[in-house]
Length: 290
Image (cartoon, rainbow, N blue to C red; front, side):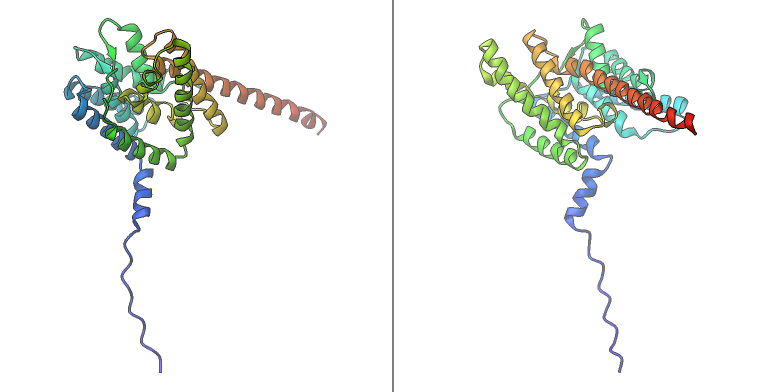
């Protein structure tokens, strides 16, 4: 006698681990994280001049991305990248006027489509736009320099979430090398200047550094390919920043990445071209003999 078929059990709900994995790997995870940084910083310490100015930067960034992407690439770009750029400009720029937020966002996105080398843009968009505004419109704008204060709860939450996202994206090593280098070189700066070591390492708890270590130096489009050289570049950014801090530059991390990042990409392109040229030369005798 054939036994009755076993009752079909309902499908088990997705494991929590799988849900977390998909959430961390989603393209919307970085925008959620940067929104968290904005809300935590503003609700706790009032880092924004106004929400209207930040919304203007976000709107300008997304609109510029959509327009240039459609006109030049014949497609509608995903808005996640331009949202991150706009919110970064809105957080990191300070001005009593509205126009620097719109212009900074437009310059940031425009750099992706204008300043290109062999089909790839060289600067992290928000890093480029903010540095240009700080340099060319110093009389009208300033950079964010407010710290989180003594309460590190907001920083801890953001660092945990940011580290998880970068770990899933296989880019955590870039942030880790930079942070370790920053602390080591901060102690060296304290030894050189005679200032308390706490004052040399405390800036990394500020909102500017949260954006810098999680979004700017880890940008996949503007970092070199090799994992080893990504670590070398992260250290070089920290080293150049240290030298600029010794020269009393308050925007040292932004300027350091502005110079080091594109230089690293150009060197990588030059090495690639030399390898291709050598490979072509190696094939020429074989082609001639055939």
